[in-house]
Length: 216
Image (cartoon, rainbow, N blue to C red; front, side):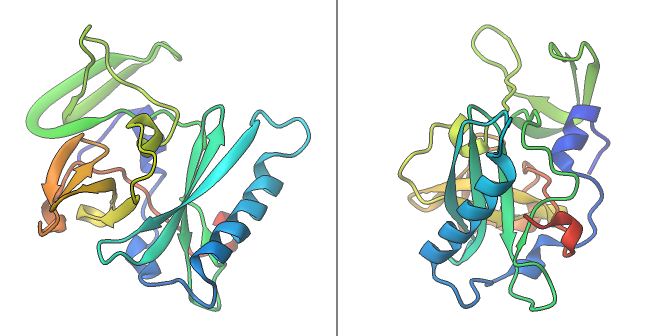
């Protein structure tokens, strides 16, 4: 992957200590509903304590390309989100969060275009963001999109099954299915469900660490 801005580095969540594929097929001894209850309880304890900036949360299951439960999404209110990996290795914490995760991190939808350089003034920090080989998407007024809510909430996904698909370089593609296509919620483009995901470049770089320091 090419170098990215400081803001995008927050999305990238640090260096990859382990591929997210280590979590494959890890529903363990608990049912989907039990996983939701367990993650909800931990998330409420961690994020909704006295003096918290958050007013509530919801937890959603995320599935891999084989429709297996493998991840969870914590949607925080009024904004913020956390992706959670479910581990089944007994020597690891069952619920891992991304390396250097930040619930209120800013992310921007983009598509990969070799040779394109996008430069953005971050209105929140005043700093310049430089995106190489990426075209950041803009609204009808030419303003660059930027979100502090999850890819699913930004796309107004409600009752559809949510997916988190491993793609190139150990990155993840948040998506929903539309017929025989995935709607990639980073690039807002459709990708065939039969695609070689090693060649899907528009993705959210989310790496999970298998140790206690990154447990939910």
